[in-house]
Amino acid sequence: MAREQISSILRALQILECFTDNKTEWTLKALVKQLDMPTTTVFRQVSTLTAQQYLIQDPVRKSYQVGPRLMLLATSILSQSDLRRLARPELEHLSDIVQETINLSVLLERDIFYLDKVETRRSIVCNTRIGSRAPAYATSCGKAIMASLSEEEIDSFCLWMEREAQPLTERTITDSARMRKELAEARIKGYAMDDGEIETGLVCYGAPVYDMNQKVVAAVSVSGPEYRMRAEQELMIREVRKAAAAVSRLLGYTDTR
Image 1: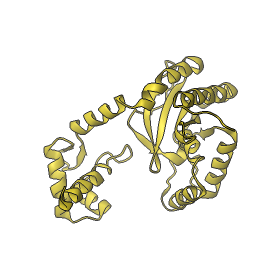
Image 2: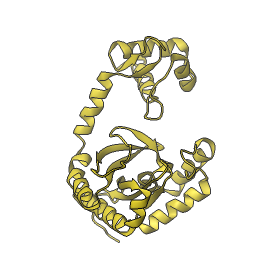
Image 3: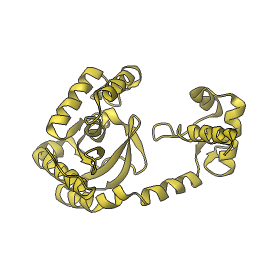
């Protein structure tokens, strides 16, 4: 494939990667500034993506959003995920026991990506969506996964936090020193906690999922209103760790400690 074609594909992917759960709509001007590309280059790529329905344009605001073809592709990828398929029975079993919202997440750059979810039938639910993203530093799954990172990777993340992390609630941790402490505790305890850090009044406990290479590849979390989660804290922590361990075994993990 010619170098020009490869460069064009990479630019198109860079544009698509701008469309996240936290930023679902972009103007041409904003994309140009974000990507630091020439306006003509971004316009040409966006026009092609729109023509192929990977993006759609609002006729009034002239801004761009994710289109139906990209949504179809994402749905197809999710439905074929081995991790999601293997984990689903364990997520449902955990939901039956704790009667709260269950999420399966993976780390995607500095966010977590919600790969699967089991809703609770009880009142007050967690407003996560399959296929959406959330800042890793504000979630139990994010902390549970990041606790396994190398010191160099944690250093890099903390440097980014100092520059970019924004509070989502009054309890969101944006201080890198405190985050290091949280990750160290999660590594020792085998689980992490989100104490109203992504949504006020919502408490989550997350535990890491390992693969056959002893590597953390995902996390399982249980989320619910603070008053219920506090009252049943021991149950929640015990069961979410058991569920994560069960998924790990399905992925071929053997605890060698």
